[in-house]
Image 1 (tube, rainbow, N blue to C red):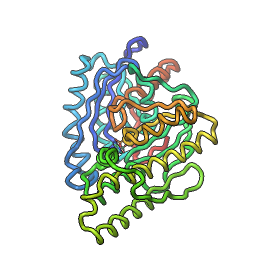
Image 2: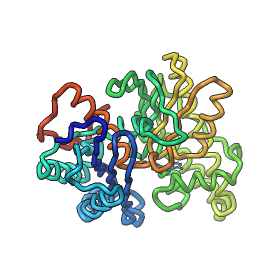
Image 3: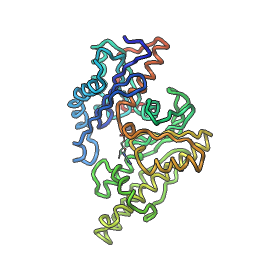
Image 4: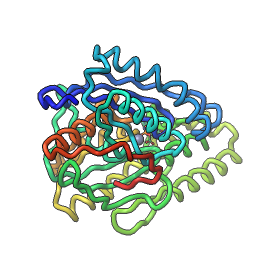
Length: 346
Ligand code: KG4
Ligand code: ZN
């Protein structure tokens, strides 16, 4: 076991959804970050779990090999293996879990099970030039295709979910709206692209009324669906003629829903540092709104580098490194009894 805390090499594996990813970190620095996206799901307009696990099986060895090669690290130099144990699709998680377990066993090094949602938040602790790290406490906002959560973060491993969606995730709201508009999956980035060309106030959509810091996005999706149907009945070319304005209006509404709850979380906790993570944190609308809040509200906001927004293994690696350091200090490594858990909570 490599216990030289000056140079810890972590191999990280992420396979919770439809991206097979591997990364190598030297302490908190990313040496390589490889992601194989699964184009197969585009044909079906969403992730098909059976196809995802089969693609993970095909991708995992080449992806891990590429990550080690790009990092210029021999597997014998590795200090530990970190992998996503949940939440996610069980079949997909199991591919990463069993690979990580056998690799760690073969190398006789520790295995670290990592929570995917915590990793989206802790990705901000990757050492990157030009990117500040938040200090504790801060508010983590995880916005992805599977989750929408507001998390109070008091320490690396002391987090509390203080708000979450009661139905669809925000990424789903983007993707389902895009589907209604006949845009290919995943439609979030396309809505973002076209929104930048349109008028955000062209078509006002109403925001849902949800108590506390929780979110709801399913009503918005239905509202958009009926709106588009109505408009198309009157003008079959409606989407062709107004695509950019519809996208801008959808994005404007979603960003406002998120910002309202973040403002409420700041008010309730008194914490003014906000760090976002997850695929939707790549969205230009939420990024602009948060940056603006630095001047209007005096917040400090942390926006992840683009390659650490959507699913990646570097974020699993940084949590692996933080956990490894903690375990070395406490001299208490876990055994290989860890397993995949599709509904793992923060
Ligand atoms: O974190 P992620 O890669 O996977 C999950 O853990 O779910 O997030 C994927 C989600 C998809 O719903 C995708 O449409 C959305 O992130 N997304 C975006 C943008 N880039 C990715 N949504 C809006 N604007 C974007 N620029
Ligand atoms: Zn994710």
